[in-house]
Image (tube, rainbow, N blue to C red):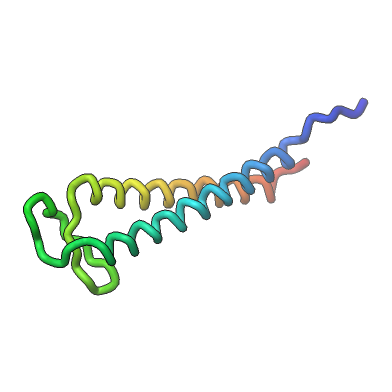
Length: 96
């Protein structure tokens, strides 16, 4: 008896594609954020902007919230990349 329920390998492939797209979007947004901060933030320390960040050999100063957002997007991108690779490998090596 044939069912229309996709098997485990097909589900894993679908998850891998979804995580791949989400990871790509996270990577693009992280790179955009870094370039945005590098272009638009002051190069001298000012009150409230105590976190020095070097972006393309240029030191800019970020507020605590900007710094936390930058760290959070980087961590999220690394975690999504790991989930994507793990799901893709599991889909590839799972028996159907």
